[in-house]
Length: 237
Image (cartoon, rainbow, N blue to C red; front, side, top):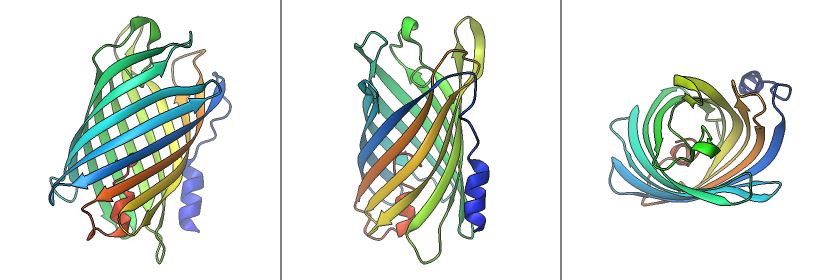
């Protein structure tokens, strides 16, 4: 009961704001391979669907390193296809440098992901803080329910990036998330989540209400505990 109350407390009431809201469905599927006790690689494909069909898609290749139980740096490469307002697709290359921090208190898992992202060929007339240059901070919280493989999760991600006509970095987006992960046989991880993508300091920009489905398959992880499988999937890491 306590964890349910905590989830409800962490999910803000966001439906009423300056900006209109559109609905999207995001799908993510990936496979990871554990090279050794500290290193792993992963390939993931994400598609994002709106009223006009596919709005964004990107394959991602990642290298992850487990420095210790708490600190896990990683680097990602994405090739992003994004639909413009005119209906055409533009393509960009992006690199992410990540630092994932984790700490367990009994069954409670506290997480913090720090990310710097850089896009090589951002279009000035189609600026999107999610795909441009930005610093992102994502605190997260999950709970391992006793005698079950179900793991409720909540997070909030803060996007800080340049804004047109203003120098420096500014908070321009907050992405709230509540959902659950489920691990099967230590190799399959499923997540279903509701996200609210809230634009900040951007009058007229669209907010997004998102239903997200994620699936991850892990190779070479037969001895990994089931609860660790949940924490390896694309959205949590």
